[in-house]
Length: 449
Image (cartoon, rainbow, N blue to C red; front, side, top):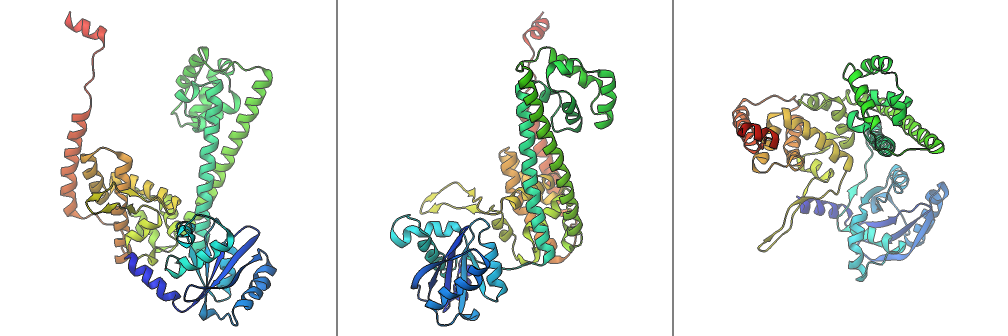
């Protein structure tokens, strides 16, 4: 399959002049390479500006090429960070074919050129063009505005999610210094914990807390999951806390730091909800959304994020294409009699990889086809994370089958028999591997007596 893709890419660039571009923040470097792989003239740079795109670039190309017609010229751009995006859009808008080359491809091509890993902008611009001529590229394409908007919202959600996790870890770090017992009693990310931390931080402040009035408040906030017993446990822990004894200036610094982190958390949660609300609203208009949510465990949030990352599900003809896009394809090490351990490549869209893991983790509990794959592996070796990842291909096959037949998920009766047999075997395995409770020495002595 990869050889066919490479051959198609090579045929696309055959007999065409390729202009390789190594993007940078201030100036892009370009090199013109003919169909035989020879560089024409010297490489040149042009500024990242309107004048650089519309004047300097074409003036330097005209010194090498008498004509620069769109059917005869292809621009190959290395996808370094986001430095390539504006130039690719500019050239694509003018009718030129634009192909994207991975920085990993140029990295491995450097020693082939001069038997060394030296890196210069002119050399990289030439390598981008030659790598593209070998077929190692992807076509640049513009998606509809709705899909591009969803993709941008998914990227924003991922960044906000990471910021939220980072600030929660910072709150935890503050508590580990001044009141390390607090997270063991009440998780800092819970709403009731946030309410308490806005008013109390140090053990002596919790000791002076009015339990009766605060118990009513946190009981309402937590929907009766927390109450007077929680506050009593906090006061009991505060009496023997091993936290640092902070002086006046240190207490003020800790209080200001915690308030800053709590404000960032509140702001991030608000923005995440707004982004998700808009993302789900847009995803619900797509026909694939209803099919995805028909899988038990795939909620509106995961379905919307998945559609936003793949952008156009109909452009994939095989589930392995999505698997490779996420970097979940296997890296094989087979040579002669040697067969090495297989690992996922992890070279791909990390956001999509996280989404697929979450979808597989939920569907492995509820969807029979995915559950069967998960249980088969669990019976061989109980490794939850690895076995959830191994179940992702089964989930993708279901998604592609639903897309092919344009219908929602329906349980197949023939698989339920196998699932029930595996469930019985798995329950027996869990019981067999559960260690028997051992009596304490005091209890054992009483039994012997």
